[in-house]
Length: 238
Image 1 (cartoon, one colour):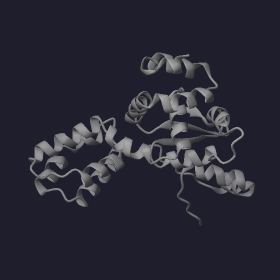
Image 2: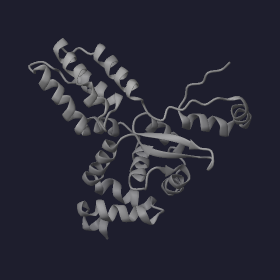
Image 3: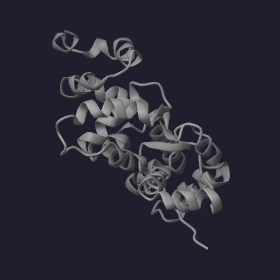
Image 4: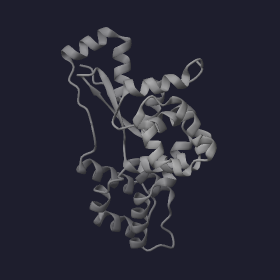
């Protein structure tokens, strides 16, 4: 027996490179895909982070007794929780104040996503921005059309597959569609999209011209005009 734990995109890469592997998996394989965390899994992850944190006992109890607010929060993310619990001190705060500071962090985790985003390669940042201005979930083939315009004539740029693998660790999730023989790609959380929205506005002079050169679909232009153009200089608008 062979048990293989991997991300969807890495599995598809392997099957594309080794057709015999695809045949074996299709005939004998049983795929167990984790699309999202169950409420119990979310709770267990939270409790594990609390157990390994250095915060005071009273703060742990406060979070534990109100854990439903965290588990059901739309911006729930294990990495955001870990970042907060291991970097935000509860010194000089009451247990209740520390809990509400955590809730505010979940409401607006932009500081966390900025730390993640600036560590990405430039190619991965562009892929994230292309995905953001498109209708999501986005098909891998459509994203490939846009990205090919970016790497055309520049083989030194990272392949799209490498960018997706990089983003899948933090910002996106992928799922394989048998009928299309292709991946569909979407963001893990609305908070990530909120962050990219603001990031593109703040850094429009640097990134938007590059994004514009990669656009392949009308809805991408329309999105920029409706949601971003007010922040652009006349140079970009022209």
